[in-house]
Image 1 (cartoon, rainbow, N blue to C red):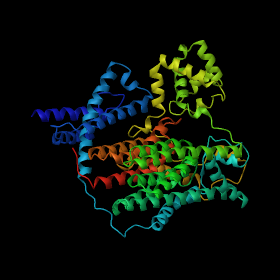
Image 2 (image 1 turned 30 degrees about the vertical axis):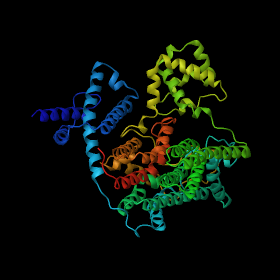
Image 3 (image 1 turned 135 degrees about the vertical axis):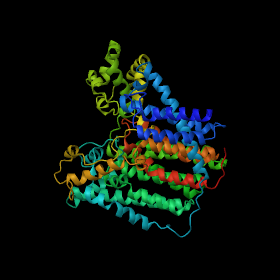
Image 4 (image 1 turned 60 degrees about the horizontal axis):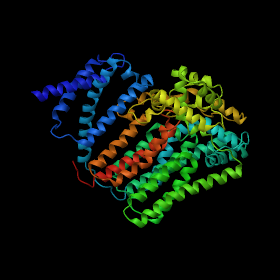
Length: 575
């Protein structure tokens, strides 16, 4: 009787936590759905074995609850205000926490038990093992998008890169030079043949071929690693049918090709972690260099990943080879980039991209605490930003570009950072909220994201190229907007909507790590290190929830998911 009463109370508190709106606090909505939820939750709580607290699941549930609540308050207020505005808000915070933690804990335990108890037969030889068939399928599945967006969605950053190739603007390594050469070579080929649209079409065709080839190679590696035929078939359907892939294949942007190279790296990296051979090391080494040349921050993903693989590798002689290879990747990338910059007389990228979060924190301080700035600090800010008095007004919690663009190159960075630190000590909460507001969507479930796909080319930016032969050929505006409208509807569907939020992938990978911990498969956790480094890079990025920064994880997630499930099938449960 006592157990039943406790289950009912916990279920009702969970109902309040999940169904209360921020404006109504303790008054939940959706009464019929709430009644069904309470009945189902009481049953879940009652059936759960409460005799033993499962520590790993408990820690996971607490972190997930805190992340979810962080997402709620920052989605609405871009601050902690939902839980700190008054005493009632603080009480509401603890009530919601009391509702979320047991609910997520019971669900997590249930999922862990179900997944670990599930057995899938190993792969069947001779089926679905060829490269060509899925390659053709992917191209066919994306053909409607190719026609609709022909010659491709040309986005701002790519316009700037093509302008460098055309000699309109000087070369600058803010966008990786090798990516600029890659896009520019196909664009110039089209112009030589008489039409800029043809050049853009060449880029789009190459992107389609690269993605189809990368995904087909993925399926071959999954077969090699013992993944079941039906699971591989599901991965193939996901790559072919999920509209994000089809639209990104038509997007002219450095991230499209960079994500493919990152996918190749993760394939070779996992294969190398499974079994060391010289051939696998060479493949991983080359993929790491190429991926780093096409996206600058990737070098800080691949180098620590290979180095860590060396640290945790069983054989000492192999450890030094792997750690040395990681260092060699870093040196090779620096030499190749330096050589390209010397040949093209390219300028270095701006330091403003590295300090985008401090710039956001300064802007938030100016927005809410301008009266607390000293005359000396104003002088430093005036020397650091053009029209520094405007940065508070220009501050946008989820993107730093409006303020970042006012940063003066060549300024005394040390003086600015000292001023930034002094201001932060007087308003630490403003700094914390500024850092979270510009990055939280990457780590909270169902957070608001930014630009999962582009609906149209950046027409204003295209004018920089000074050409009148660039434009869509086969479609109207309504045709181009239709896929995006369909995605907006699909995003609201149960289960399918899960795949439209960056933070969901982060927590899905965290759940996979939890499964590995339950089976004590410590070595396989290192498969997730590249993804972790990408997430950290996203958190430090200038835009909140930007899919182009997270794109590599979308490409590699099916690999991590299926490889871990295949591994779990070969070991026993450890409680």
